[in-house]
Length: 70
Image 1 (cartoon, rainbow, N blue to C red):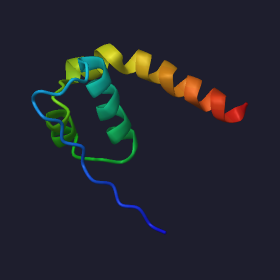
Image 2: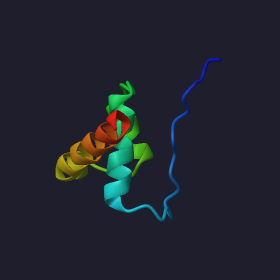
Image 3: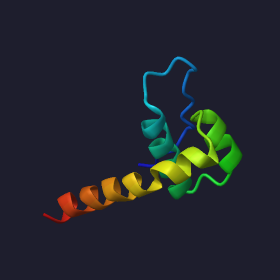
């Protein structure tokens, strides 16, 4: 079974917070989406948003990894 990823395009009226949208963008970039500009636009975030929330995203990923190990 193969899966294809489709870009997540958020509506302007999204109820997601800026932090959540930044996390989604960071996950997209980590997953190999190479068009950084498109990822930022699709998630309505900026480079400054990514920089602001990257530490919390890394903590989130670390917790998820630890849960998988336990």
